[in-house]
Length: 356
Figure 1: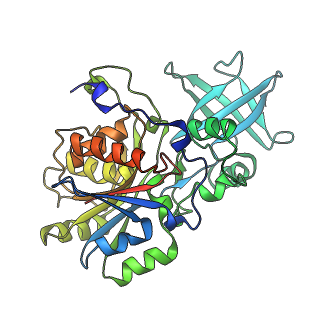
Figure 2: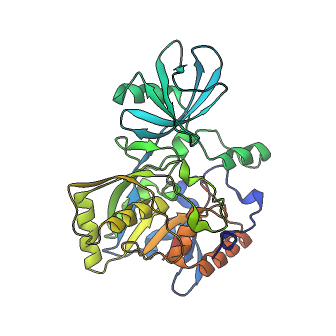
Figure 3: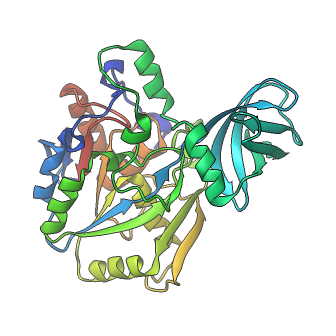
């Protein structure tokens, strides 16, 4: 297989620039991965496809206002994008002239927050040490920072005035179950944006087991695959954390032949990264945590995941390869062609798909 096998043409007016309200009133394409059959539903119909004893796995990571605007102590504007926390420092992207190690950047009025560039990582990112840590750091960032919406949404908003949106991405670009203690994503786990508290209650009332894992979505989710032999692509690392009791309950459900359904590619990567590093799924410590760079494409053998709720992904992306690995490349090609024909809304704020 080649990168071109994961390409498709999408009309620009199908790129969603704003979410549906209520969230669970988006559309839902249901794809049977064994038969290739397709059904057209609404997202709130999802509950009809779930059964008592099924396990629904959500990523509870919270999107941080990762875009900060500052200025160099020596003068000149600088844009800093928080990418990944590395112990006490942050790996960041920096936009501006004359950026180099040792330079100080101040944010806000005066010196509310000051960052010093510790080093150039020579991979397009820099390591910054901030003068504030922990809660004090987040308190300032929550005020000064902006939620970084995907670039294709920004572009489409500039090109189209067809959708009315009040710009409150800090609310709409966050799942209703995002955990304030799990801050760290620079992009939303978008499959989860369709859920409402009411829908989650209906799912629980049906006897579905809901579990939470954490994967902090990094910039790698937008990184293009540049090699025609896509297997040569290097994934960015992302931080994962899964509690022991969660793993224990999921493994016990799996032993009982219950269906494990992940919400999004992020929850999928979290579980399958654990499985990849543990030949015996039952040998877990108090918590599974660390940085992973799992790359899932057709031919991958899933050890946990049976079904997935996902959105419609960009052409030639690693996310499209992941869903093709679960559902089959031909099935995904057919489903995407059908979605375009039926004018589904695509990408982060778009409609959903249930691969069953």
